Length: 135
Length: 194
Image 1: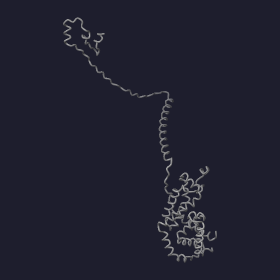
Image 2: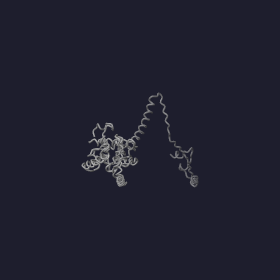
Image 3: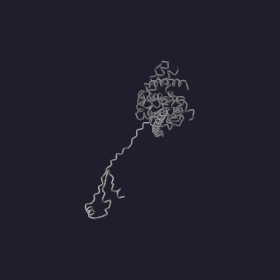
């Protein structure tokens, strides 16, 4: 390079550097991103992590309980039991067999062998004793 | 890209290696490093081409780097700086075209041509004076010549690189550079003897 060109270049560099130093350079521009597998993989991994974390938490809680029991002398298990209580209401219905009036009248008139079931209507404490008598 | 490149600090990588990372992996940090290295200088380039409008220079700097990002797949891996200046050169040309800058500038140059010729009265023999004289001359240069000067003497690109940036043959670059240098030499002849 001939001397004048060297001088020109040096001067040009000085001028350019002077300008460049005073510049307020903006931030790098925002860049649109390409779609890539990470967009799907990241939320999926987060979800898997969450589920795993929750199950691990439950597992550890159980483990912790067992260990506590082993380290103590007296094991007091308080187990609330919720039984289902059935309230049964016994409804008794008194069975009364009434002999028809006409039949009784016939028997009284001369029938020698009356049927046992016809003559019993004994009930006490809910038991029909007439059945026992017939057998 | 070798494995050793993956573990090198970004500051130790060349521009081309950084750009390869941006291209192949959308590497944000590599892009940031490139921006850090070149943004100020590029903004200065725009600033000088566009008549000293700093906000416009800042916009074009961002625009140029946005193009670097969007066109990263087109980077062939030869020379990042040449590629960046090719993008920037096109941006400046587009700006001239859209703003009518070229016509305004030509009219301005026609009016002030004689004044420029007569302005070579600075006889001070130091760098400051030479710089001042050169600056005044550069302000009056037509845009195409100003761009050529900037690429060659400020950004220090080689003739083949300038040919690539301006998309013209190397011979044309050489002849234009010769004419430009002679013209400047003539106008700065007082300082040539220093």
